[in-house]
Length: 620
Image (cartoon, rainbow, N blue to C red; front, side, top):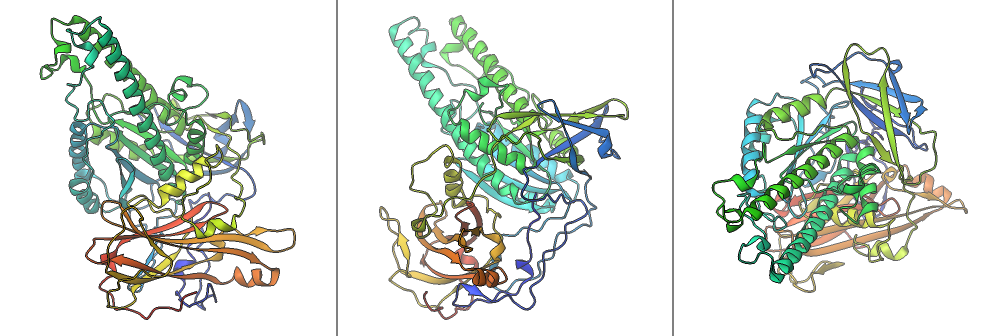
């Protein structure tokens, strides 16, 4: 894991009209890693394995040494090159102090305590009937009332896309406010029983249509409709996990993902030992890429069944559908069989998810509050093992991991991810001069190697989505004047199908970042090439894109200019027009094109609309 850079955050921003600025005199070097930070060398493919060790009572086992662990990959012994023990940091521990930034200045950097474990609550409305969404919310309210201080938790929602509801915080009052007032509660259009009453029925089970051609046709139509719905849910869930993995990869250490869902579609992750789950979706390449990103980000998944202890809907006295009446025993039998098979498949998926990532599945439990407490406690005490695989053939095949203890202190249980996909290290994209001036979404046909990147490009710019921290930067947004304008700022475009109406407020958007945040590729002539794009989107509260602006730079730096460039602060000035009388949101991004890395800041326009205006910087 690479130590997150915060040197930029200690610098005084100097906004000028040139792209290349001088390094401020008070520029500070990046802080040294914390005592529990894992710093991996670059240039070598390394595998990180977090191992939770518990005694027979489920309590964490501390004090083990690297010599107590034996690690194998595909049953071939591996040499442990780095070893750490992790325990929760003191409650008084604090992340880096960023100080107070000037009005209108924002950053996508999230300070976290070195060596701490981060926890994510994912509330899944896409795969969960509304009845159980309400129950989970009530359970989480009970949890935050008793939550111990110091646990760093972020909350995400999943509807038709991933939504960041609350960034990492250890303040129970903040969590309580989010859970009580801001959790999504939405009926999913992709569930056969979106409310959760158990009253859905197949048309083919109508006793008046039994054993007729019409019943057979209806059964086929129903099966095909459900298959399409399931495929869409899998794709949407995979997209969300893709965005979440990229976001979490920007933070050091282990992350515990508590996924509250009323349905766990097979195919989210799958290794070679689970062909039935893998066969549930055609997105094999995306599965492998997403799983690899989760592994690199050290994410352990704790699937929690939001339905609690389930009973067959056929025995629900509120279910009065004709297919479950005493006169239709065939419908009852089919309902029982369908329920049993569905439960078995989803429980298998939960166990696979937990096993492959080193988490734990909570099945048929009404104690969600206790499940959350257990997951957070378990996932905060672990050992990190790092090794360089002796097999250098990165053929995307699944490789199993085995960890054993030597001289174990009594009866212990180990939890760790079962393996990883040998996805080759991502190589920088070939620089396309035309791409820098276009939007972040690629117009090229999707290929197996580019599909993962295209999805991430789109998700990184979605309103309300997590704000990636692949690239750390600062941005200042200030009104240019108090006057309204009827024309758009230069390089701004409207949605051609439904253009936003003026008048507009114009804002100056000034970026600052370190050149080390972008990829500069050595060329045979001694130059260094790079490509960076700056983007500003204006959205309405419902996520409709109103205005867009892009500015790209193709870099080809001669050796003497390169030496100056890497010691400077990279800056860019843009202007954006925001429609008047609109509760608009600005999503501001930097994209390093060769590596497909993003840095994103999102804020409501109201956060800067009241600030004193500035004079427009000269256009470039």
